[in-house]
Length: 373
Length: 86
Ligand code: SF4
Image (cartoon, rainbow over all chains, first blue to last red; front, top):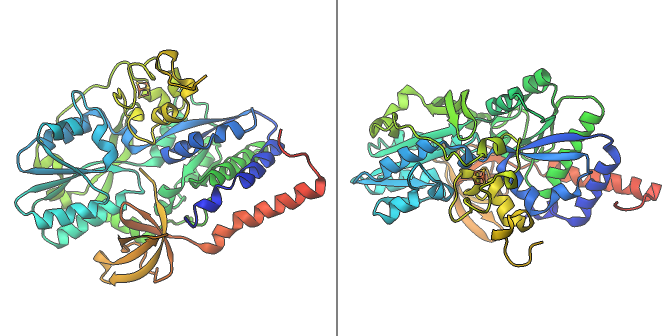
């Protein structure tokens, strides 16, 4: 595919890796924020091409992974109501709530569907006025404009039977929460390119300046990621801490103002609980009061449901880059992609699932398969 | 989840701002995509598509920059006759 395949060329990848080895003289720890980037890194083994001093730790940038258990429980409560058609991106269906997941709810007769776009749900609600159509709105700033557009279209069509369970999260407050953590060892970030395609990167300048960390807006292909690492390491080696843009083919400093305008029209920033990280101020999006009609939490009275995470799961430490997946005692034993305990094992972008899939050598001996070791 | 895929606009099928839409080609696979957030993108433009919605346009000249730069470091490599790899 154009704008993808040409960024996967092995010779070019090696060329950047060489340049990186030449420029790097010390030990540096970088965090890639987005789960999509984690997936590329583990899939292509990019971490094995880095100079020995450069460590990449995996960040909290998988919305599926950071959606708290109680949101899943709320989704389950709504989906199980008669008359409800509950729609979600496919990844959310297997995320464990406190007792079940959405797949199990479907097996018990709930009308749970997975959709490609929130706009499909608006259409579904139009075609089925007798059903309550609910969309599970998870995601970062990349996805929020799509959901804002769906709400606006539903409002324009005067739909009474469409609502959203909103669990949106925002990247910059999460970066600050990580940087303020007591054991933070992150010295630079690869910022999530598609979040910035929407939001731009103006918001990162104060973070780079206040915490003295380089932040490089980075794409998702192997070449993008290695170039992002090279730019961040070059900054660190020369004592700079600035915001730079590796992903200029898709990201401008201001981002997409049209998308931002609609996002702000429909949503407002609120405190949000993250799975594994706890509550972070102004780190989520909720519907503005003018759009309360479309708020599924209100419509179905589920806002007061609370729940606990599995005590075995160390996803909090994984999501902050303190621990790697195979350091979790449950990794590959009590927790597998078929029976996940925590969300990073569910989503294909979750660090635990990526390690499980691409690093059989890291699995505990009992569950390692075939040719590993 | 933040996956977004590049595609090329083949036609515009709806022009009103809230429902602007068009047919987008993903190298063979064609899909109706919402174009409300890229009002300036016309037929032939490359857009970045996420969850059925174009979230931004793709700048072809910016896309070429990394290869120009790779070419440069390659020339330096060849000039200095540095050994390849570790
Ligand atoms: S391996 Fe499973 S239990 Fe351990 S941190 Fe990852 S998701 Fe949680």
